[in-house]
Amino acid sequence: MKKSILLLLPLLTLSFNTLAAPQSVPKKDVDFANYYLKEFEAEVKRAQGNANTMFRNKNEALNRIQTLMKAYPQDAAVQALYERARTALMMSKGNYNQITPAMVAYLNNEKQLREKYAQLSETKWKELQQGRDLLTKVFPTVDPLKNTPETDPTEKTIVLPDVKYPDNQFVGASGEYIVVGKPSTGFYFVNISGREWLGPYEAIKRFRREVDGSLGDSLNFTVLGKITGPAFEIPGNRRTAMAWGWVVEPEALYIDGRVVATFDANHDKSGSFVEEDKVAGIKEGWYTEKDVPDNASPERVMEIFLASIKEKNYDLYLKCINPERYKTETAESLVRYHWDLHQQRLHGEYVHATFSDTKIVVAKGHDDKNDLENFFLDDAQRDHLIKMQGEKVEHATVKSQAFDENGKQVGGKNVHKLIRKGSGRWYVDDYEIRF
Image 1: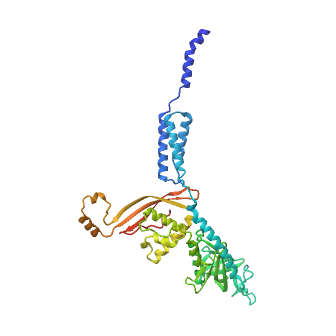
Image 2: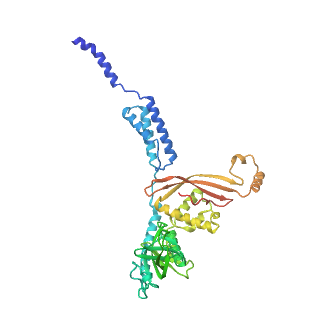
Image 3: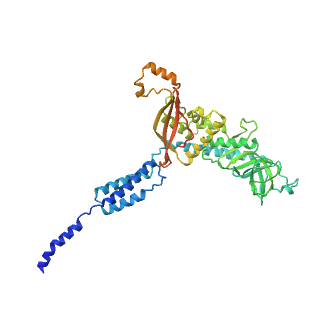
């Protein structure tokens, strides 16, 4: 018996050593994991820090490397894959930037200004209603077909809520209106054909441009106006039957908690919002940038351009833009349109942007910094080329990277184009590009 056990000892020792010996990693498993990891790394690089990207190879790469790490935790090749995967995973979560108080000071300044104008507007709105012959019952309306001298609302002042523009705007047979009401309660038609509407409404848009960039395009007003008489219209859309309603001529528009604007026939713009003339003086103390230096680099011009939008400095905004881009009335309107878009983005999508990767090329004229060509030219030849090729025009591209209030990158990098002519300074050429 003892002899049998002694004969089996070498076999048991061999089996134990075989089980204890580390197994080698199958090469094909490492190769497959490496392939998918490379694809994932390439996707991360193309995303340029944008976390809102679909990474098609991410899960395949991570699953394979996780399996290898659990089975072969000591293998050097597997550990290398693991470290690369960790790096790629973190990069796929997006770039981050430290958001300082200075970067979001414009939001706090605007909040204080918005609160100030909310209080001023509330007081003004109450003043506008004092001493007026107000219609005490708005709905249901007086039926125009059953109207009597005792019930006639004509010439009375009405405070009409829920005037939605442009949602409920329509063009009727007798004018352009906003409909308020429904068949069961009757209709009011707010007349928006004349200056009585356009003056205050344009003032509201100036308020959005100069004070409160968070106002959207679809607005809900309370209208103070006079009832001028009945009208027979198709309110709102062609699927609605024709109906009688009372026409309201607006005198003031109020957005609750925001602003009140009034019609003024003697005003150069036919209307204004409350204490509009004081806005510029209040904001003057906010401005961190007030001009564009002649020697400002393309990146510096973009920083000033961003500051002008943040701080609602429309004059500086125009100074940053190539003057050729707003020479006509239509072009000026387009500049204002994109100003509004920039305002909305800086209040809903991102709060700051950084600029980098400037590239400059000479688009026209002699390039005095082309060392290769200038090596073969003497002074007389260079002077001749300068005269022959005309005024030098340079183009620059600068990349922007936007961040939200938490410091997380929003979207990928965007390219902005700038232009410089002769010995002048740099101007933003494609001002419409988002940051």
